[in-house]
Length: 148
Image (tube, rainbow, N blue to C red; front, side):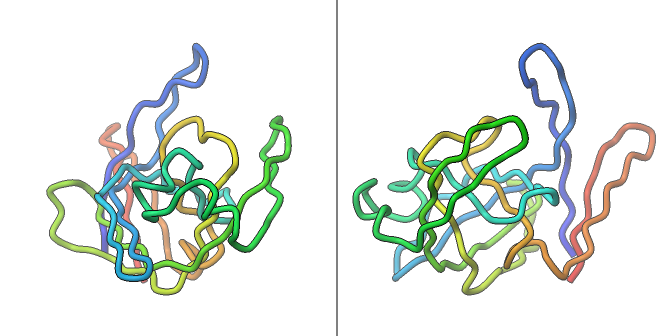
């Protein structure tokens, strides 16, 4: 079981709290540095921005565009193109966490635009799907748990 925390995020002038963790990606022998990841149970797929492709996948933007194509749209946002690659994702709750969860052979899509909140978004399909994701707000400590 992993445990992590929520962070205050500003979207325009409004603040909200969102669950974050730390993740790294392995593809074809390349393992990335660890980056912030937003755990988004409302998203259907796992996403990174095109700007993060070299850091997380070890690929150029041109190379990324050779992946499995997908059109993605978010509420109130224009549709963007994304390109999928199968990877392994290692997730930790925090930088200090010793426990990890490895998602093997998941589809990670590179969005041809930016992501507003984090460089990496872990969503449902081949990500959080099939796992219990629990929000805890005991006296505003804002923690999350991920169970297999």
